[in-house]
Length: 253
Image (tube, rainbow, N blue to C red; front, top):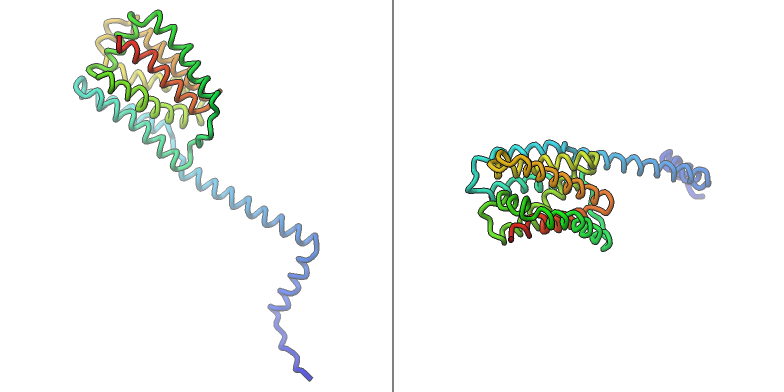
């Protein structure tokens, strides 16, 4: 006769638990508990990600604007350096926000959205180019980018300026503020950045200055509208084309 195995309370409890889990009600309850745990874990991860990438983008705007104003005494000999550092500050804040998870990721863009961005830029830029090229645009381009070669200006208008401003204003700010407010802030940024370079013309020709401010406002409102309607890449392409029509072509004339 075989001796009886000693009583094991832990094994007995595990056996009873496994038997209970074999019922449909128990399995459903266990699945619900597991789903709840996964949901709570996902929310906790999201909170940690949001906290890690959280930050006030207006603080980055203030830093870039202060840098632009602080570098003004370097004028007129270091306009390119001032522009590069100021736009670089905007791009740096945007890239950090993207890396830390507080900025919307860029998805796959459709070609028709890029086409709309080009079309809107042409619709805005051609009338100004036809009617105001010699009166406003050409003198403004010469004063905004004094002493620059056509190659340097092309690099600024196609790469440096659109990337920095699109990432910051349309990528970072527009996800948190109303689109019209983003347009106003972008226009304020342009005034802070450009007007110290052309301060003599600003003081002597207030009418031309008013036209330039209105044009900058229209451009920035167009970019945020395209961003809202067609996406971030479309707004980026729109700014590149508008820069070429409104600033680069008059600069070459």
